[in-house]
Amino acid sequence: ELPDVKGNPFDYTENDVVATITKPDRSSVRIPAFFDGGSTWKVRYTPDMTGRHSVSAITLNGKPVQPAKIEPREFQVTGSPLPGFVRRDPRNRERFAFDNGSVYYPIGMNIGWGDVPPMVGKAGQAGMNWARVWMCHWSGANLDWVMGKKLTEGELDLDTARRWDAIVDAAEKAGVYLQIVLQHHGQYSSRVNPNWPENPWNKDNGGFLATPGEFFVHPRARALTQAKYRYILARRSEEHTSELQSLYTI
Image (cartoon, rainbow, N blue to C red):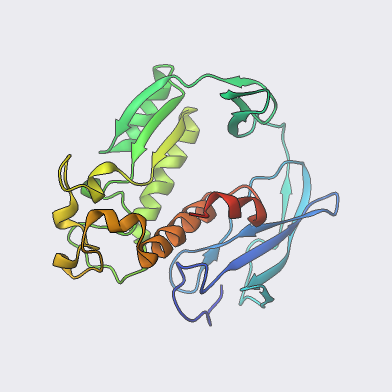
């Protein structure tokens, strides 16, 4: 709980909250936190070893802060290692492999949108291990573009974020790995499946972009998008911040 945070909690350039987690071997990792409403910030961490871990420090914009509370401050990791995350195979960059080196062959389909959790469950039951899901506004899956709801510029919708939590949790239980479409073509298209006329960043709707193409070059559009991607990574991160830096640099 961080009750005194000022400014936009969704923008890491204003509020970069990071937790340092100390491992059983006394090494440590720095994990970005994410805002989850009220004065609550959360950290999600995937351990790579068993034993007692502890949250040894919290920083805000690089400076130590004392949270109102941390739960839990320590946690015990038990069990046997899972294969790990899917990444590009260092032995063959045209293939995928888990952290333990075993090969991952994606088999699945484009689920797209709709009531995704049960569809992901059925995909897993059918033997699939991959699905593509879109962050589209018409399905209530876009963090900064919610139909029928006016968001402040730079605000992200927490109800949508929690729906994504449910999607990711369902996929994990089903053994299905997700390819998440962070931006789809219609958002900034005026010709092919155009959604530009209703885009909230369109000047005609009170936004700041005169044309769809400005999305790729306008400093404000780039900054807002970078902040959104950083929030997504923090909400489901497993690496320390220096490795994340290269992922969300546009």
